[in-house]
Structure formats: C-alpha cells, structure tokens
Length: 389
Image 1 (cartoon, helix red, strand yellow):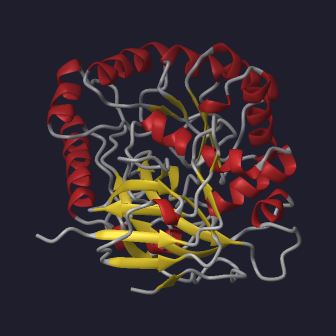
Image 2 (cartoon, rainbow, N blue to C red; image 1 turned 180 degrees about the vertical axis):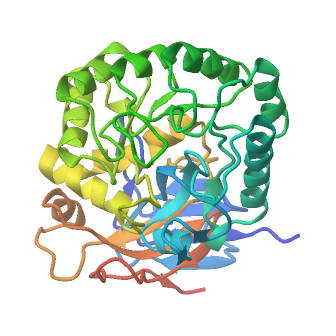
C-alpha cells in the first residue's frame, strides 16, 4: 500500500490547541498516513513525494474542533429534530470529533438493564463502523438505571463501551447510588459525565451541586445548564470543590457559562474547561455551535481567542484521552483551515473572533484526508485554501 503524504504549505498561523503554547511558529504541516509527521517552515521540511498538496494561501490552521456533548441516535439522522445530515453540517462548522453523552433520543429507548446494555454496545459498533462524512463519533454511552451491578460495567467495558451517558437522565438520581456506579465505570476504564442543573426533558430531574460532588463523575456535564443552570453559588462551588471537567455548552445559560469560565481562570484551572453543544435538543442542531462558543467566551469573557480554541481542542483531547485536538507530531492529522469572514471587523482573524465574529471555514481534514472545502454554513472566508496536487 502506498504512503499517503499530505503537505499543507503557506499557512499564515498555526493554533496548537495547547493552553501552554497556543500559537506555533511555522508555515507548513506534513501528515503521513493520517498522522502529523512534521511542523515548521516549508524550506526546512521534507516535502518531496507528497501525494497531495494544499496551498493554505495565508489562512490559519487549527486542530479540528471537538464537540464534547452530543446526543446521536443512528447514522447521520436524529429523530429529535427529524433532521438528516446534521453531523455533516457540523463538520462544515469545523467539528471533526463528537462525543456522545447518551443516545437518549432513540424512540422507545430501552430502560431495562439488558436492553440498555445491548443498545450501548450496538451504538458503539455502528459509529465505529460508519463515520458520517468522516467525522469521528465516539458513541455507545448507556444511561445508567437502578439495579445495575458491577458485572454490568465490566461487561460493557469488555464489549468496547468507553463512556457513560449523562448520569441523572435515568432512574439513578441519588448521589450515593451514582457514586458507586461511577466508581465501577472508572474501574473498568469507562468515563462518566453527569447531568447538571434542572430537568432537560420530561423524565429527567434536578441534579444539584451536592449530587454532582457526591457522584464525582469525570465530567461536570453542561455546568451552565442543559438548559436550566444551577444558582451562581452552586456553579462556583462546583468549580472550586473538585478537579473534574467543567463542560460549557451552547444549549445552556450563556451567562452561567461565562461565570464558570471566569471561576476556572480565577482558581488557575483553565485546563478543565471543555466545550459542547448538547445537540440535537429542543434548541435544535447548531452546526456552528462550537465556533459560536469560542467567539462568545472570547469576546464577552475577554480572553484571547487562541486560548478559547484550546477549550474545544486540546483541553477536551487531554481530558478524553484522544489522539487528536493538538497540533503535535504523532497526533491524528485532524485540522481545520479558517480565515476572517469577508468584511468582518478586526485586522486579523483572531481579532475578529475576539470581537465576537465567526471565522469562515475553508477546509476540513480528518486523518490527513480533505473532507470538505469551502463551508456551506460559515460566512465566506476572505481567503480560501486550495488543493494544488
């Protein structure tokens, strides 16, 4: 099998996805067989024998965005909003990886233990076997129910399940019971997320700070509510009283999201901030939801946009133990090429985002393969990358 070598040249700026070094000096990134092989100056790198060359024409290269909180069902269809190709639309918004917080919108979702395990395993399998438009969907996230025992979690883990759906969406709502099941999940390498805030849909319930802290799930799911946020003092308490992931979502309370972000910075723990959309939901599907979160947090929260990009890339990748989300040798070659939207204020793309504007996505690349070119969903970019070989 021939080696696939993708060379991206004439890059104007590289965002790394790393909080500690958000900008990388260089104008060229090379991927071999889907993994980053070299980063630096075109003149210094081995660009011979490329199988594909992209001329970035001065635009910015960033890691593909990661949506930490979605609710898929099957394929690229969601019955929640009766929408086809919603994942493909999100790819056009720069999202290259999605993480399921539970396939809860499936009509007739089984709530018995045998059924919920079967559905989780099936969900994990079908998104492993089929990646809509190339997007990496990490799915198969069972919603835990009363009566589950340790062997159930071992069985799920042995079958390849690595996630729990939002704790609190099923019958397990007491902190003590949730804590025991979260411990069993963690023992077998399954990462957990807990619903935070008021009920999202009929059947869910209030999960307040005491339950969240007692359950000790790995991710404080939608700390800004999905949709209804907890009182401010409970949000700050959650940020200050544990070291778990602080997930801020599009389909939540934006003011509460800013509060959570500011609190994380105040306590010196910005690496805990990750972003999701919590879509599909009653608020719909937001193909540009993650870009909107980056622009909102940067502009209203007054933080550098290159830092806000880390929330949707490297922070999530590190917390979720992914091999993407960071521009680093050996990582998956998942990138987006973006530029200022046409006629947007701001002298540079980052300045434009800092003023609250969205960039234009000119290309998405997953595993070193060009998946989309000019986005059909973002405003048109000032400059566009071009496949020249």
